[in-house]
Amino acid sequence: MDNLIIGANGQLGTELRKLLDEKRIDYTATDSKELDITDKVAVETFFDKNTPKYVYHCAAFTAVDAAEEEPGKSLNQKVNVNGTENIAEAAEKVGATLIYISTDYVFDGNNEEMYTENDRPNPKNEYGRAKLEGEEAVANIMSKYYIIRTSWVFGKYGKNFVYTMLNLAKTHNELTVVNDQVGRPTWTKTLADFMLYAVQNNIPYGLYQLSNDDECSWYEFASEILKDADVKVSPVTSKEFPQKAYRPKHSVMDLSKTKSTGFNIISWKEALSSFMAEID
Image (tube, rainbow, N blue to C red; front, side, top):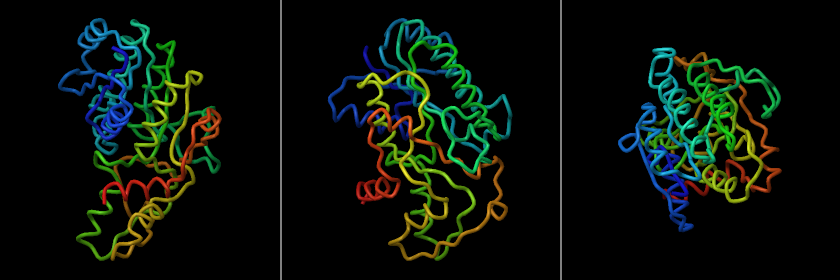
């Protein structure tokens, strides 16, 4: 087996499957029903039997607010930390290359400048903490790996902010969206493209940051999504929209290292426009 996609039915996993299908690249797809990554023995047995060469780890617990409810005990911990450790150990044993997806939530969002791969992480919520522990497990266990931090992910095949805004616009005349959290949206197609690009071009192993280019607030993102809809979008502060989990105020990640590999990154507005045309 050359290519293994774990979490293959999720938003990113489905996008990656579509990309490999288009390029006629063979792969094996698993989800929790086929492979429970929290079961160490099951993971080890699967890897020993199938010996994948490249492992695309797209499985994750992404319910950020729910992760706050049972710190260190919830599915957030079991999937994002223990599951990643299990995959890394099994992948290393068979000599595979691991591609692991992380998040901008490893940062506290207090930096006014862009965050580089060398900046010290300081997660302020349980999700960010768990994903950082996943990063550390991969870096400590694996010989051949790509850790890709991403942010504000949207795509055709799952729940995300774009679909939420489009659906709310059908039943509301006015929407309020926070304007004091700034980051970079990421189209799953851009992310899947880079995952495959990294492997096919043998870029140096290590940590990378990938989103679409340029930055915006959630309010600006929503305004662009709904620019052709008959709905008013108004800005509010985070205090007016309380959530269980802390959200970074400024989690704009520097993309210089990823761009230096030769990978072309389009702006988030271009990505959004292409995505909207795709779902029309």
